Image 1 (cartoon, one colour):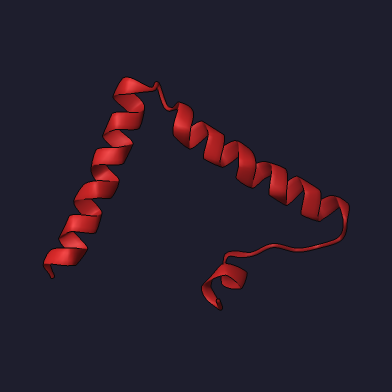
Image 2 (image 1 turned 180 degrees about the vertical axis):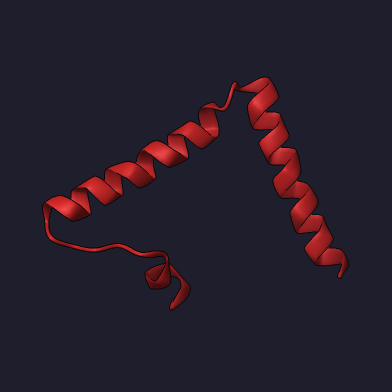
Length: 56
């Protein structure tokens, strides 16, 4: 149970740090990269879903 709590606390700390110190630039970069991948895939008739990532 403690490792799960540690991961949750680390994720929460990252989100708070990103919003306070970086004005959300890190998450915006991640979202931009994800959207670029989706746009690339849609142009080439490739469908990307979260199930594709979960199967690996």
